[in-house]
Amino acid sequence: MRGKKRRKDSFNKEKGDLPLEKLMSLQIPATLKKQLVDDCEFVTHLGKLVKLPRTPNVDGILKKYLYYRSKKDGSRAESVGEILNGLRCYFDKALPVMLLYKSERKQYVDAIKDNNSPSEVYGAEHLLRLFVKLPELIAHANIEEETLTELQQKLVDFLKFLQKNQNTFFLSTYHVLEDTETSSNQ
Image (cartoon, rainbow, N blue to C red; front, side, top):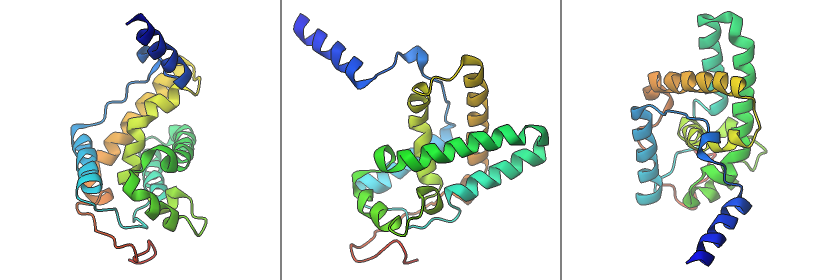
């Protein structure tokens, strides 16, 4: 028994797991959690995919949020803009690596073949998946605690914005895509 425990401990260290207290807490509203569950159900169990390109796309959603924030609180718009740029970078890098289900990989290759960035092609469904992984990703960024608290507040505010606009940003139905159908077909 002792040998197994040691192997598990060394595996966790090798994998780069962080202690739970180092992870930022990001409460996803209940309606958005349901959206994530429905998304998983559509893709993994029903064999359906989000039709691409999405409107609004991630870039559009981020711009709408920046506009919303600047109207509400213009003095902090610059720092919000920086956070949104970081969010876009995380999304573009994380999507092919950790945000796609296996059945979505071929669609991804087709969708970005014209050198589009994922944030230009994908929408709220995939952006929301990023928020599940974000605490772990940010923990590796070595951010000061005060900055982390501010970031957390702004990300929670963004989630509330997504929730308020859920009917506008998220699809209610997905489509079965044939192998011959490409992402450029609408």
